[in-house]
Amino acid sequence: MDKGRLHSIETFGAVDGPGIRTVFFLQGCPARCSYCHNPDTWNTGGGREVNIDEIVSRAKRGKPYYGEDGGVTFSGGEPLLQGKFLREALIALKAEGIGSAIDTSGTYFDEDSEAAIAEADLLLLDIKHTDAAVFRELTGRGQEPLFKLIEVINRLEKPIWVRQVIVPGLNDTKAYIEDLNGFLSNMKTVKKVELLGYHNMAENKYEKLGLDYRLKGLEPMSNEKLRSLSELIIQI
Image (tube, rainbow, N blue to C red; front, side, top):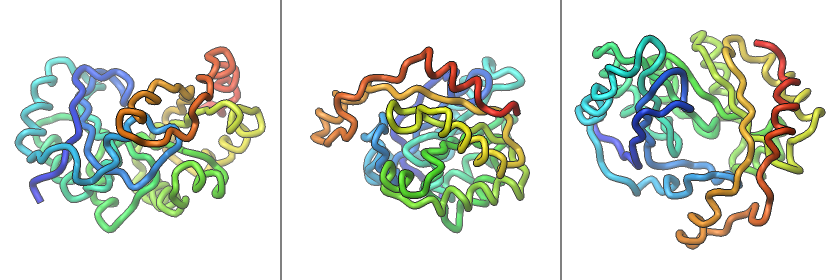
């Protein structure tokens, strides 16, 4: 399988893994997260068709800027939804000496996921919520894919950055961070934990797409409170 579906490309990315990165946003996502800021990536038939050669060619343009830490990140959407294509792309990038990361929502896992994860240098994993019922309410998905991902990442000993969006009134408490710390204790190779503040910048995008924004009117997360909660995260 040498063709996939691509939503967009970001060059000189600095927040999707270490160093300077080229970020490929793959099209399609099975989740419908309440605070998703890329609803235009949901449709598996959207975006455009792309082949491995284009991925490698675009990635190589940024190679002079990657340094020791940078490289390519596959985000989305949910990149594991295109596991076979993703694996081939990761192998091709490795042959060019380009490091790679998979940014996954933790909402999808299939028979191709482990093979793709095995080729990545780093995983960025979203933890939507530690509670199973709230997780499903937020995403429309169960936690089973998340636990399968964690099992594979542990077994393959892949470095992982954990990300948790903090939403006012949902998980912005000391008690939740304590639960999160307990959750993190099940992961063997966590190198970094990032708490990300909820923002509402996607509201207009939902309106243009004719979609209902479930958190409409909710104020963005306070940076001050986010910093105080970040101090409660266990030291990695």
